[in-house]
Image 1 (spheres, rainbow, N blue to C red):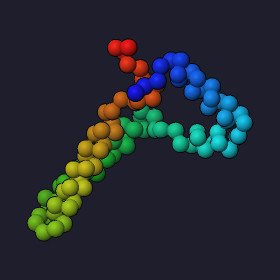
Image 2: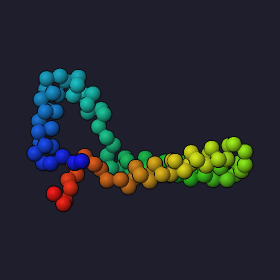
Image 3: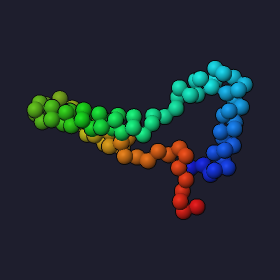
Length: 98
């Protein structure tokens, strides 16, 4: 559930006060920030391309236990890549119905 404007403002104030009190915490919390939209899309496209490569490799390998394993890995990469590339950024989004 996204935060309201007031809650986001309070959260930002708390974060700023924590950073002011403990600079090490501030540097560690900044390093854990999520990827930007462009980085997320690039990662998603890369995962889809690698997943498609795995799917082609699974068809080339054929039967045996390698084919289904590589195909499953490819499918998971394709789905995860598409999800990463097209999902909306959750932080800072507000529900327009509220």
